[in-house]
Image (cartoon, rainbow, N blue to C red):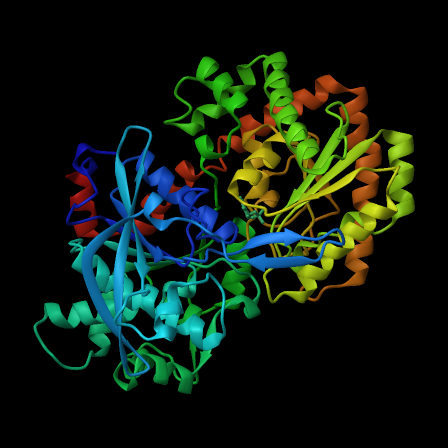
Length: 587
Ligand SMILES: *Cc1c(COP(=O)(O)O)cnc(C)c1O
């Protein structure tokens, strides 16, 4: 980065980028994230702080967090609001703004979280809060729960984030922001705020024209995250008009919204650059949105956040620049195998100790350990591994023992996902005495760190092409843990058979409906791979297994990180072909 970019961001007037996200995983103590989208947002901001990119971020303050998960002995999930002390992490600021929702004035306050990078560069994250005395009960609840409530609640939240967020950035003093990055379509209503700004700057108090809409486009960058149409937020026109009011609804119509308010379509039509989150996802998205060029920038994870202490110490010793420059991890090829195994062994012992403390299952450090943890969404096929229990038992007998660790929350209204968690508990009973299985409660960033680093292989079984990217396998790769995965999302790019892990089945283009045929086919491929390749490699050819761990870090850890990802956003999305931006970059 040129010197011109270096400066104290907190309080700075002209950040280059404002990053908007419905959820952000900043700190394990701040439960305002649900899963991959929020963790990615947090990792992105952490990398921005490390590379001293002038960026600010905006999200909502969820006093009840996502939820705290409890599981009874049958695996039945119940949810409680997460109790956390906002003041312990965030600082309240003075500015207040208002937006009109359903004809009422809603007051919005703001809290600031300050994130510090490797060299002390600070990035502010603003949390909008409507739990203020002047607001109605309903309005006060709007910043209560992440992904809670009905469509109306959701649309009000998105109006707060987008429109409220733009007004708040002005109120706290961040003017003349170069780029607005929409992390998923949830933030699309920020377009209204930008239209307002554009009108104000030409000094007219009238309705925007098509030319004003054109002035907004160079400022927006849109990252889409879902390869299935049902995953894109849509609201009926009458609801949209009621929530944002007749005037703003006319503006949205000018931006192409007529039958419904489609947040993805809105973002597409108002952005200079659109991308999917892996090569394949970019292609699938391009097929879904033929009217717009859709690029790909593959996700990553923040290296120092996700690496276990034992690996951090190892790389501090061997590759002292790795924290600042994770590309350096490519040189892991020169790190002695014995040191890699020792670092893994330590990470594994920490996990096994934790599992035994939590569950009393008597997990054994010497036994091959398979990890599977992610949101219990149906397409992730949490139970694929249990397709044929007899086969599974036979593999354990013939090819070597293994133990399974699971974790993941189901969305409170996802009955299919909750059923899958119960099923894992039933399979656990059925496998008793043959294959030890645990399901750890309340999957979050802390648990993810322990799990991704401490298992011997990371299992991933999504139904293609539903996994836009997936990032937990990248966290595992940072710690030398190879993946055993269906070829979807990032794994299409990260997979080298027998080098960075193993594939389950061949590459298929698409399988949009859950299909039992595909399940049977993938389960059988999974069993074959486990029995013939994975377990023999671990038990009979340990040197090769450790060499795979080394290659996993060298090839995948060095690439699938958010430093590389953000460099691509800077080069391809934020700065492309833009005079004023180049001037700022040149200092
Ligand atoms: C990384 C992470 C995820 C995302 O995992 P995927 O593999 O992308 O599904 C979800 N939840 C938590 C807590 C995480 O740390």
